[in-house]
Amino acid sequence: MTGAQPIVIYPPADDGGRRVRAGGRFLGLAYGLLDVVEFLRLAGFDDVEEDWVRTSGLVEWRGGGPEAWRR
Image (cartoon, rainbow, N blue to C red; front, top):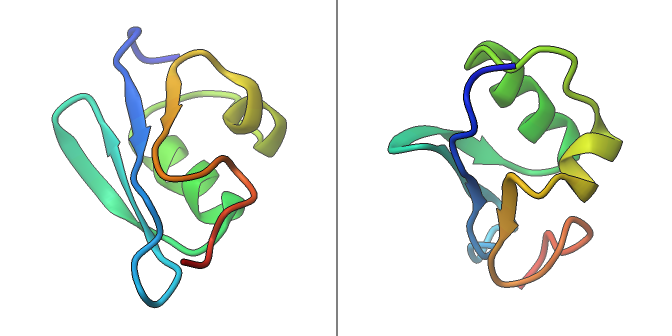
């Protein structure tokens, strides 16, 4: 796993997408947990799964938790 950089999932936009950042880097606009997992894998996080994204202390959920994808 890449260092202990914070991962921020921003509040849902009007279309339900949530911006995803790791450290200072924008990774993409996610429309579900699988998108977040894929962005993190592409960014170098190894062995990332949906459960890890839901429960990891490295992930900061803003504007709702991992089940909030609509405004």
